Image 1: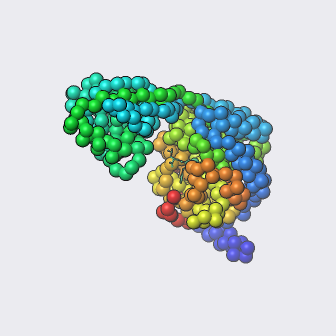
Image 2: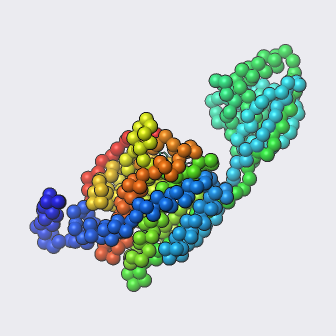
Length: 461
Ligand code: BES
Ligand code: ZN
């Protein structure tokens, strides 16, 4: 305590002697006592129990994009925002969902038990089999027209192989693995209208031998596989600035509400959603000079689809006005008692550089708990914001726990203190931008660090 006050006096004295005035409005010192008082207006109200209850509720069922479970989560989140008094919008968007089907394969009367390519076209075809090696670009023979191509895995992506034989008029694909004993590989793109299945390496090599001796006729029957259009949603709650005191700037606070299929996603990322909701709750009645958008994204696990969609709907001017995006993803895991301890908080940027968000986060961390390091990582919804030039960072605990993307990502793995620490830091950072007493942030994309904080390249997984 003594040391902290001394630091305040010293830094205030320094500013006085250099500038002649104490520039109390510049949000640069972690020791500014008024910053701490403002932080307290947020963090004293942030309740770990609220967040924990929200994670428990959301993780009652998996929330894979486009499923009933996601919709239950989306409506719950919307209701919460509305309970706090926010105008809330559901933003739908469509995506192509993969259907997992079944398939059979018979060659010269012998039945196989093939794997169906993920997204394979559904059809039944019978035709002669032609071995086309790895179906490399420019190397597929014209004779494959009307035939089933037998392809070796390797060297180029699955979808290129499919395209190369499709372009030559093949009617079906049997791919064999190039190693191991598994056949569980293969992906087709939407629009590649050819049934495609996989067999093991041994099975494939046996067929190659057999083809030397006799012609082979195969029947591939793929059912209920392919792509269908599905719908996911983003949830957007907006806090408008005070009408007489508006900097015109916007801050986005985000997390993703979808989970992987079959996983309850308590930490990934009901935890982030709970922090977004709790920050929204405590800020609901606070006056700000900055617009704050609380957004939970859908279909993150399918390739950041919700955040890409959200960013694609922004006008140029809005993009210019968004000065920061805070993403929270996996912010609550506790020690599992397994091989490793749960990781500590870190801020990741796409380019591995500090930015406005990490500067604010590091300073808020210094004031509220500890200085948070930064590092370089994508893999979450800060990516699309970065791509349009918005300072963005992911707040996450790394390394991640063993239950990541498994059915074991459940509420009992959640640590209330971890949730609280992250929500405190992000809440205090957001309030530092949005409160009346601080000036609008400069549009400089990289602000000088208000506190010293370190680059950290710890393993993530
Ligand atoms: N929460 C994860 C991202 C993550 C996982 C970051 C582990 C750091 C450590 C996120 O939901 C996710 O799983 N993302 C995908 C990528 C996305 C583009 C589909 C991933 O990392 O595989
Ligand atoms: Zn996630």
